[in-house]
Each structure stands twice: as C-alpha cells, then as structure tokens.
Length: 203
Image (tube, rainbow, N blue to C red; front, side, top):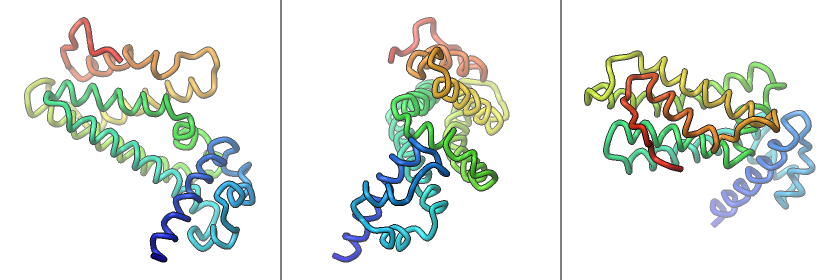
C-alpha cells in the first residue's frame, strides 16, 4: 500500500514538474510552484528526487519513454519495411508537434543547464535513433533499400525532425510539424532509397 502511495505521489510530482519546466525552463522553474501543483511538500519532492536537476532529467526520461513506446506500438502494427519507416517518422514528428511540453523539454528548455542537459538529450535521442536504425536495417535486409550506414541515416533523420520542430517552437510563421510531415516523410524516405509512391499515406 505504501509503495502504491509513493508511486502515485511521484507521478503527481513528475506531471507538475513537466508543466512548470516546459513553461519556464530549468532555471526559471520554482520548486515551490511544483510543490503547489503536485499538492505535496518540498520535503516530499526531495524524498523522491534528491535535486532539481535529477527531477528535470526524470521528467525528460518519462516523456521520452512514452514517445519510444508509442513508436514501438505504431511500428509493430505495420507489415512492410516502408510502412514501418514511414510510421516511425510520422509518429515522432506528429507526437512532438501535438505535445509542445514534450518538444520544449527535449529540444529547448534545458540548454541553459549546459553539458548535463546535452548529455541527457543525447542519451534520449540515441533511443529514438535506435528505433529508426532498426527499421532501416529491416528495409536493407528485405532489399527495399540499398545497403547504407543506418546509424548515420537515423541521426540525419532525427536532426531534420528536431530542426523543423525547433523552428516551429521559435517562429510563429513556421510550418507546424503536422503541415511539414508529408514533405519530410517523402524526402527522408527517398533519401535512403525508398521508392515512395506518388500518393503516400494521408495524415
């Protein structure tokens, strides 16, 4: 029973912290505000997370795990290598586009933390890159695309996605990820050798 209570408290803290960090960034976030939103105490927060930095990284990890799981489920429903690659791209781009909190936390709000944030961001992006690398390797094995450096290609794809999302977060005139998705999907699939049909899947 105690474990269940502790887990529920931890989840409330993470939810509240995600809301505060995404709006105010790491340095602008006030622990007292997280205390108020989570309906707990400062001692309770530091019981579960020994520092503000550890709490911030826990929020990043939790949101990233949700996205990784969403991509895995979407990919598992597809039968063809093209379908798996297509839906992996769509899911990452559309999820970041539909959840500004996640996008801000992964791409913007921790840069003032310096090396610690960059290391955590790199760790998280390596998980996404691993998913893309896996579906590209399947496509190479099936003969749908030529042999390539799938690890490098996966980071090229992620770099393109992150830049498009960053532009959207920072510029009111930029295409939203939803608007950009069909163009990026076709360009990135063709970049590794897929023969993309003239009419691809609609969103």
